[in-house]
Length: 359
Image 1 (tube, rainbow, N blue to C red):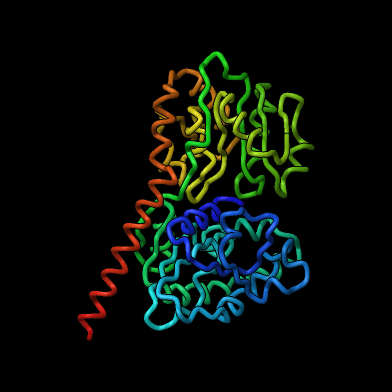
Image 2: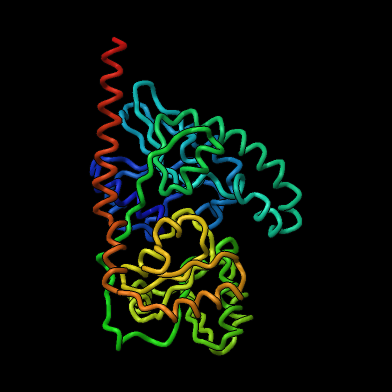
């Protein structure tokens, strides 16, 4: 249950009778809100070890998506940072794609992913990516309208698909977080989220290894073991934690460290909802949610030295935690639902009027 699944939850609140189509469904890892809907899976779910290794079946996903039978639906909303939009919409339906990003590993971050892959993957990745890339570009024509989760992603949609996109920020449950008085704030900085290579978590650990200040890291992922190996005693690597622990650390940290370039980035908004400032790399979605000098500060280069400089710069500022939390409310779940409902209604009305005109 990460950001993409939270978007599906919000869409299900908008459309309580909606059916859900997906490649793999693991009920015990899915929220009750989603389990309340009819969920259909593609043939990927029946392949060996699919619940754990579904990403390795990427080459088969175009075929699997095209076999999903969507006859009878007048509205289809695909939510994707992979190939979900590649379904075949039936005649007369309206297909809206809520795009978290065109697939990073074949488009804007292809070379980074390839450089960090194992030997065999590096050999086959160019051919596989070429096949998926061509299919992905063609499948964009099956979408009637794109909605992007940030201006950053809208720019990628224009570049790779040559399509415009409405921007509607994804839902963040900003009311789920607490703000504490200044005398309750701890003496540590926080890094939270999935610990994967493109998020560059090692930069934060290296920065605090060098400074000697306290850093707490919450999250799991492929880099967890490596970070535990390189962390000095002042850096605490907690691994995955329940929401209650994450929420407590958001509220008590001096600031959140956000070293990666994200499509949107829910974690900084959650920290700001707790009244805490954000120290973020000044590219990608963070530039649309963090206000430099008001709700946090940016650093211009992805280096540990730049992070240390940004920590020092933030220490010299006096920021208003109430103003930070108020800014986070611009990204609430309620606003997402309000904007998405209105946008879909406008598009359906326009399509109905166009059909009448053609008739």
